[in-house]
Length: 441
Ligand code: S3P
Image: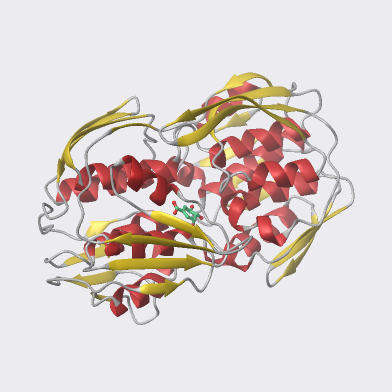
């Protein structure tokens, strides 16, 4: 992790204008590194996010003998070693701040015939991991968390795994993916049923690497995903579009800074990720998707956002898994929206890089916003954002959300612990200032 960074976000001097291209999708970037490493042959990845989280995944595969050239301007060439080609790492694998890296890697490593240990930073070391070790153990894996259910994760080698029929206890793409990735190595068919749609990049990208994976819709919400173990991944070329979770900061900024008209270019608009657009639209935002196209097996579009005054709303709890990473910045939109906004059914936010309900409530109160904390969400009442000092709690999205709030604040917002922004969006400050925001580090 980079050394300590403080950001000062000052009121925007102008409206936001022009076109911004945010970095590549984080979820897809992790999976591109993982699947390219396990494939037979050489894969070329473009649009890779060069944030610390993805670099942690890449470093882990290099430590297990994978050779990769790059990343260089988002381009990475990976010499895949095949499903059984990884070597025992000599050191602990450090997943930094990344829950996705740790949980998906646990699924892969639980199926190897060698031992490994996954560690993380202060934030990751406090996050729940039994949600992956429990289903993996029932597949015959030998993996364990610390006594408190958190990292490090100790994994011992196994000869083979048993397939599993698993019903996810909560809507989580990370748990789904960990079980499916272990299922690649199991003797037979593994199936995972999700109670509500979660991001489906694992399923789409497995297919892109030539691996069969089938999704059956059970009703409006639930689906079952099935794959059979024992197959191979085939190297491919993959182009990763921009991350809607990073674009979200700019969608909110353009929706709250008077007179703005901003275009976000080449954004992945996979329907399991676009809850942010639905939520902002239900607050009255003017957001249009233009130039729809397909890139790397994913729907992509340019997103045009024009300023209109937002109004508060009750956010549909069904949209929570489809906008799970965007709630910190949705809170800032809500603070600027006329009336009250109610967030409910969002208890999972307490298990992200920080407890995002308490981190946002604390930060919003520090800058003068009226907010009531609830177990599974909060109620935000619009008012004047006065400014003040906030803490990121080792969470990139908390830091960037308050940087956006600074644009419409009376005074400056000082953000402590902003070095964590480098995990997902290394050029955030630069792009924000180009678009017309006023952020100094
Ligand atoms: C991710 C899944 C989500 C999300 C995370 C990335 C993924 O987590 O919050 O940032 O790439 O699979 P959960 O599956 O725990 O909801």
